[in-house]
Amino acid sequence: MIRRAAILLGVPVGLVALFAIPLGLWRGEYQWLCAAVAVALVVPPGLVTLYLAERLAKTSIFGPLLALAMGTAVRVAVGFGGAVIVFLISKPTFNTEPLVYFGWVLGTYLTTLVTETALLAKPAEGKR
Image 1 (cartoon, helix red, strand yellow):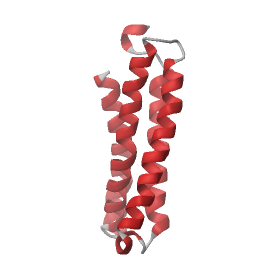
Image 2: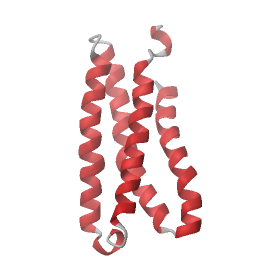
Image 3: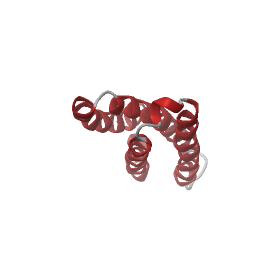
């Protein structure tokens, strides 16, 4: 479980950093702020989903599928709903380039979703 959680945390954060660092140097610190907010809103629900999948896999063969569906719904609500709330609360900060902000949220969401799906598609170490 810890190894899978580290992968789910490391891949999206690593890819976001890979793109955010050069973009921040080129286009300004706004890129780093958008990337940080996107990671903070999207990655934690993915970790919760992974934990739920581990727990539900013990009760049903469809547990990981159910957890993936629930996790997607939670991540959309927390990730995109949270992004809208942050956007509205901090009006002057993200109003300058809203498409860049929501692009970071979308990219982080898709990266986390793909990573999580790959992790849930293959069985855990002890279940082979």
